[in-house]
Length: 209
Length: 212
Image 1 (tube, rainbow over the protein chains, first blue to last red):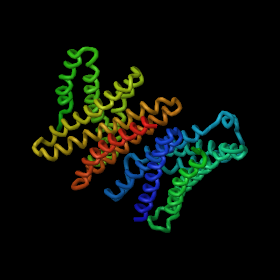
Image 2 (image 1 turned 120 degrees about the vertical axis):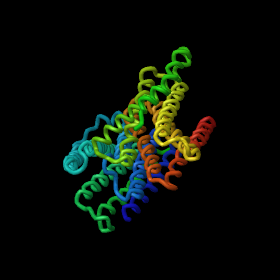
Image 3 (image 1 turned 90 degrees about the vertical axis):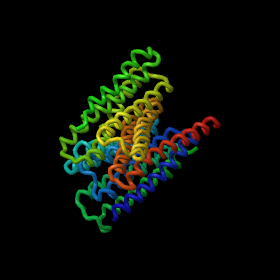
Image 4 (image 1 turned 180 degrees about the vertical axis):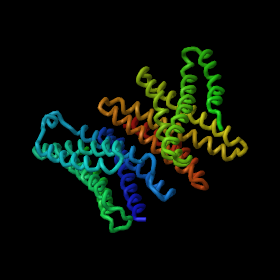
């Protein structure tokens, strides 16, 4: 039951944000909001399939994870969002701290490869690891800037928070299997829903009208 | 047992005659229809292969394997046309809708030979439902590609993302339809409602864009 509540909450959050981002993308004709809308739409679609499967079949997909494809696509859009915010100067900036953060993510990726489906874990975790590098670099670079360029740090922070929560969620899923509220996996997933929602206000702060 | 190769020959033969007779300008539409049939036939083979490989039942294969295979197969002729011929938006739109509709037609023809054509009400709703679903999936990918390919750096992510969105939509439809009862009827109506809302929303967006 808690899994269904958790998924319904996340689906509501991502669907509302998808509509919100789409409206802004159309009214402002903004490419960045379009990519963010694509992220939310693909994430929500994957979640909708997962939730319906759980409700109708009472178990999760066994053979082929259709939802995983959608979620991989959503994180690919998140990576594209990171890349679309890059400035030429930022491109040349290669701080050691960003490499350290992405190395931690890489270690977590290698750990997760032993648990789930190898190919899907490699694609998904690999993409988030690359995202973590760009986000950390973006935060460090934006904090050195003045004015509107400095505000870009908010979206980078939000993306990094989502990446950290996603990895924590997977690691927790390897150890905690119970389906009651005491399972920390669900608490982390609730936090992830909040993190996904936070992308929108962060984007509004980072990319003003 | 359904002899889908025979159905394929029967349905494609008039298209081949059409391609020969229609002339260069109009033969394109017939080619797209034949391509849709051919992709549906190939998708059936690939589906059966994976279903056998994983040892799944019909329902699991329909929900988890068929959407992935069918959407990838449907994308192939479209991708070929868009990459090689680089058509104008109007021509691309014709290709997208024709391939989607002919794919659904072939699927419906196979369904009829397997299950009979006695229940008109059920066939009516199924015909519209399956048709709308395949056209929506082809539209998600096709129209998306036209937009996304304007930005070279978004090409790979965009193509993959759109394909995944179409696969998931298809899987949701198949899930509804496989459950049976009232959910099945809802499943058939769901793409029809999506198609109507898509048309209305598309017109509203175009109107808004013109205004601004």
